[in-house]
Length: 478
Ligand code: NAI
Ligand code: MG
Image 1 (tube, rainbow, N blue to C red):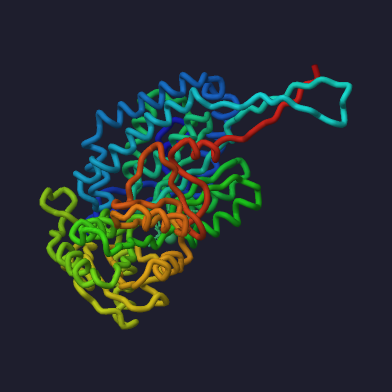
Image 2 (image 1 turned 90 degrees about the vertical axis):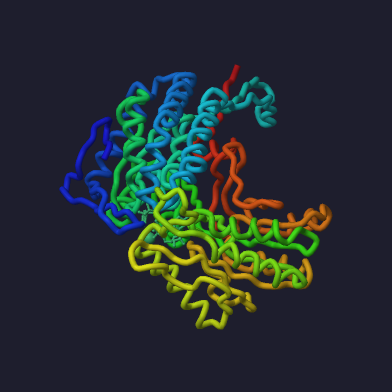
């Protein structure tokens, strides 16, 4: 682990196994951090924030460090993609094209913001002090020590979404990667040191949720928590944060709908819907896991999606022919297969797939159900695997109701070429992002986050800076 600029083991001497999900082999051991390690890391971050060279650095120097880090990631892109592939199970090409490429782009984008953080000057009236003259302005100041807690589905990228704005604004960070996928964060730690970030600015503590994550969120010297993960843990963290009034943003689960209107090209919609659910093996917070198709196109679109699903070659992430890898862990595979059983027992019709593939590695067959009731658990609950449930609908008002009828509100996509139908639907959808004729498109400059139980706060774009900045108002009698 990286604490105060030095590589260190856990003080308690415990270790965590890291497993390659494609073959169930142990590939590494990392320290199992505990409250003692968290305390060391938070205090290092605090020192770096208060008195270290970082606290005196100019914005342009922070910008330069972030750009240097992005360059180093680019130089090591293939290695990082391979690490992500054997640790998480995703394909190395996908890791290179999506995870690593977006990470580099995002750090460069955020580097630019370091020199563009602005307050405002205000012409004030102060009606109860008419004899005085005043000048007022606001300044934006870094919030302090940031606890960044990251999940296993996009380990490097989600870490970057938190490190980027934290470092651009001048905060310091304790990063806790997911226990299933700690390796890319540790490699990133080496690059952070090589880039020249002063000691203690970024600390990386590996460990699980209860023993490392929880004490990090409870630490009184942490000023802001940025969490991505399950809604269940997000709620716990929200309550913990309130105890110390720690600022908090939560990017949580989803059950995002894909809505196909009967004016569109069914083959294009089916290909889009398949990609929306099967990308990253369905382990995507905004995965299109509910497919609503207008009735006259329903059979055609569902058959096409099922055809794509059943012909998708599964395999090791380093195998260039594999289109889908294993799920991240045995726990996740069991959870997803459990939902497939629930779907069957709820009476949903299994169109294709339906359980584990093979006996070695955590592979699950791309699965498509046809459902007929909104209240089915496979329609309501986040599965976080390659499992799609499709339902027919008749009119747009009906489907608008169904789209919003889950606790979540992260993303939604609409497939149609009729502008007025699309425009009438967009305002009705309670979700942080609406895609039209695409799904899961993300960009460094566009805010991403949830309505409802998908969390609060936004990542990426200018909006993400707000969560890392306090606003200070200054009044001056002149
Ligand atoms: P999780 O929410 O338990 O884990 C995410 C991160 O939170 C990990 O780093 C973990 O160590 C940490 N964590 C866990 N408990 C904590 C606690 N009490 N205090 C502080 N940190 C804690 O998610 P998990 O168990 O890996 O997956 C369960 C389900 O959560 C998935 O099946 C999926 O539905 C959802 N999920 C959603 C993600 C998203 O991108 N929104 C990412 C990962 C999981
Ligand atoms: Mg958990």
